[in-house]
Image 1 (cartoon, helix red, strand yellow):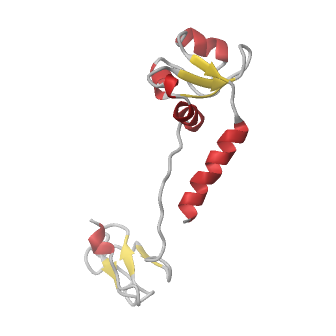
Image 2 (image 1 turned 90 degrees about the vertical axis):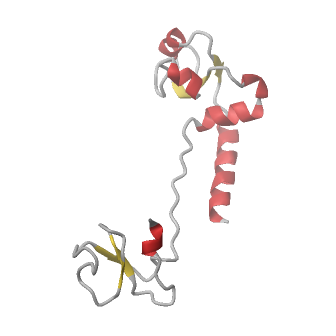
Image 3 (image 1 turned 135 degrees about the horizontal axis):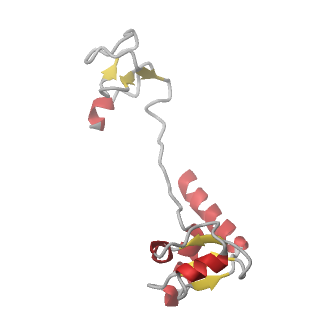
Length: 136
């Protein structure tokens, strides 16, 4: 599908059609293939790379990575009985636990969950490592 988007890197005026993804020459106002006016052109278009990194349940994933005994167990990262859930692993989510849920409700939904207090210093450090990997 993306092969149609490939354009010579030495011609920064090339672009593509948003509707059919066909490559376009700079002088065209409509797509040469489908006639659409929805053309994209930019000098850096073929040098840019975009990735979506989803760090869902990030805190819980870090805690499970650091403590193998938590594998296969529902995990909630959050405050005390009067606090709220910061995040929960997918095992706890299946049982109805959600971020920002009051802890007493989360523990009603998933009484066997392991509850860990947030360690923001650790999460910030790992977040920086993830960002450094994306910048490399």
